[in-house]
Length: 351
Ligand code: SF4
Image 1 (spheres, rainbow, N blue to C red):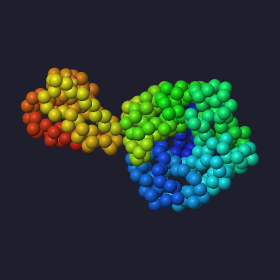
Image 2 (cartoon, rainbow, N blue to C red):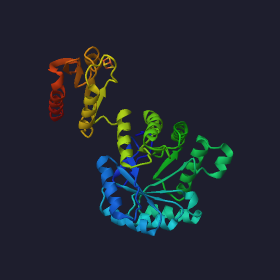
Image 3 (tube, rainbow, N blue to C red):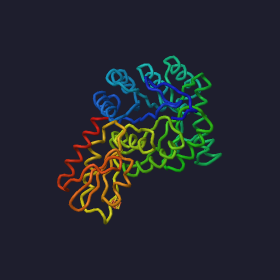
């Protein structure tokens, strides 16, 4: 997203240099299980995943990349630790990017071999640090904080720069929001490489989403972050849903149906909560810039939702349907849902 970062290409997808923020996730099956991995990637892609990462633990995983690539349409990132041979094999088999830690692939000569292979195949590399992989020298110098994370990440990038690799993505992940935010803010001042942002080991669904929203939301609102992962312990499809909603919440994705609904209070005398849920579910996957309101009462509803394309507000035995704050019709409470959906469909089809 940041205009200041360098634009690079991961397969057919551009990242950095003012491009839209790209949503990533990671497969949970062993990569050598091609059938399950391909099925998962295609489900994630249909949900909105734009770049997918797979782990490469052994030569079967590295070999599988070739077959997987033939059956998917989004760029594939191979994540390799501790092995030059696997990194090279993954690249030769068609990985669109590799995620490696140059500090653990066996010294200078091996870093050079991986760098040469990256250049020969014209792909980028992601390097970085998380709180579990900060280099000892920086840990001793700074302790576990944003300085040690950033220095460690920049040192990883320098290993590859030394051998002529310039398409680099960097990450500095922590498992808590404040350190993640501080680290990326510092890194964005020190580097113009595109940044992959994320909170690592964020936890199970609900807390992970809150942590990631706090951290990544802050960064995105600052204009920091070119690609992101909302890391969740669970089905990765949840990561994609959360990432898409986060991009909508911070205003980076406007092409969706924004359903606003009041929390309700003692003034609400009809089941606006249920209708709000139904409208949200119905419009979830419609990519049109529309704003719809479901409000609890006629006293405040139409006024508060004046800027909505369409809205409904209820009283005890009737509801009013309004467009841009102007009341269009009054309907019986028991016909309200049906009437409102008719209007929603007409609005969506007319856009
Ligand atoms: S719109 Fe009406 S029902 Fe909803 S929170 Fe406001 S006052 Fe309460």
